Image (cartoon, rainbow, N blue to C red):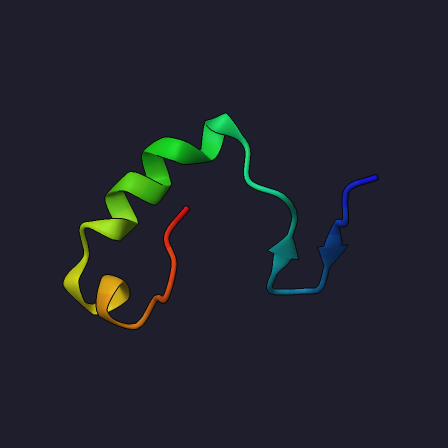
Length: 40
């Protein structure tokens, strides 16, 4: 069973392989990487 929560602004769900390019892009952003404890 996977948890999937949605609100008007956000969608929480497990990561998928389709998320990898965007995660790679965001992890290269200095402001994001310095405030994120763990990047999958």
